[in-house]
Image 1 (tube, helix red, strand yellow):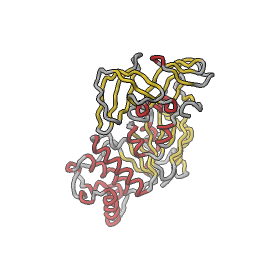
Image 2 (cartoon, helix red, strand yellow):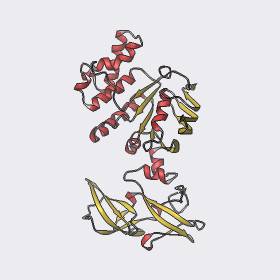
Image 3 (cartoon, helix red, strand yellow):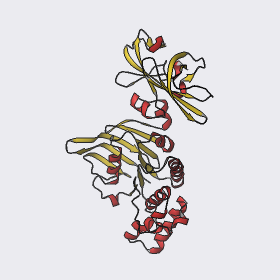
Image 4 (cartoon, helix red, strand yellow):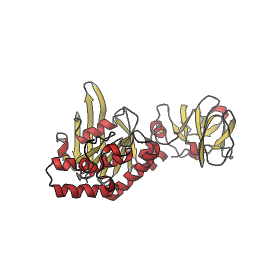
Length: 356
């Protein structure tokens, strides 16, 4: 296990800068997830740690040692890719142990470490099969086993579940969480799926345009985002953003709804409210009419997707049984304490009044 630290790291391809003066500490033994939209630089950052991309500027340290110019094999890291990259002509056992064999380990040690990794991943019964005879989830376990046998200081995962179907992704998330608890290794994981990030991470790093927008625990990022990008990216369905005008200590929303705000605040702002805080017809402090376009039924929960009179889109969570159909207009209620404010640039406005 080891700490990974990036100090003022940048990455350029010619004149294009994809990582910009980035500082990040991945604590020893943590499960840190890099999340963000496509093109934000998260996979490039991971590949720099792995040694598959060079660092243009700044310092990369692994276990306290400068690693900028170290060969990948000397960094003590193991990477699990999006595609499993298994040798189709080899058995599972040979795939898992191949790197050890190439490194010159004796046969008995290779077999022992392969079996140990297979036990951890619960794939011992698959050791004599070939990849063509495995499911997607089994192939992913083999790829992870190939990393485990190397006893790396740091595990690197580059969107390892994106090729799996929805049900299998859920079960594999559970398996990865269990694996981390069992082997206590440092793990750095890249995904564009914020649900994966919320499920797996000790710490989430939200990236955009080659920079870090915010880091924190899943609870911190969901409950206390620094800006509208993080607030909208973390959470599914995303936070509702309602346009408002601030003047004289009041926020004026569509339909004449008024909310309190700091007296000094003036001009256009955005009011953020999570779907679970907008509830149909239960008599909370404020009420907005919403025309429903679609009802998403998820068993114990329904999500109502609609729009306000000014066409601002709104998602509403309804846990109680409600008979609401597309085309209907309903009153949706919320409380002051559940409101977050963002200025025109997207920066969070914190105050004692609004979810500070």
